[in-house]
Length: 192
Image (cartoon, rainbow, N blue to C red; front, side):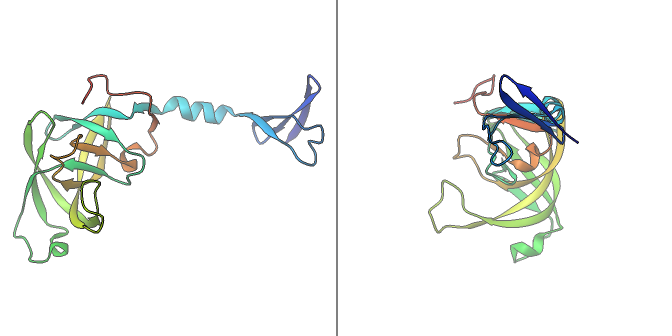
């Protein structure tokens, strides 16, 4: 349904639940949309949690809290895991997918805990601290991560991140559907 209202000599068009203010007097031929709002967008934005560029996130199985960098450019999360033990490891790393693994996770304070998981995949990656042509394989496991009451069981790459500023990287797989990122916000507990 389309209706037209006239506001101060300018036209406003309501189309599919959106109100658009059109500044062009020839709005029928080339509308310039300056303002749009829908109640649906407002409800969606209000129902999402706002997280900053950094946050303190817990690995729920161990209860360890981690200083985390929120990275919307990363598809999946990555956690500091300086050691791991695979039950009956195969010679070829890809053949370990599906096997149980014990992972030692370690936060920025040096607190550590062993968590049990299953290897669900292996990826080939290059990190920001490696040489340009230096790629490494990393295992992926599912771990429960929690922030401000929102708990998600997500894929996490296990990696020795002890040389990085943040022992936990939060990717889109944790953020999707529940979070909006405000880069002006920072972890209230602070880090670095």
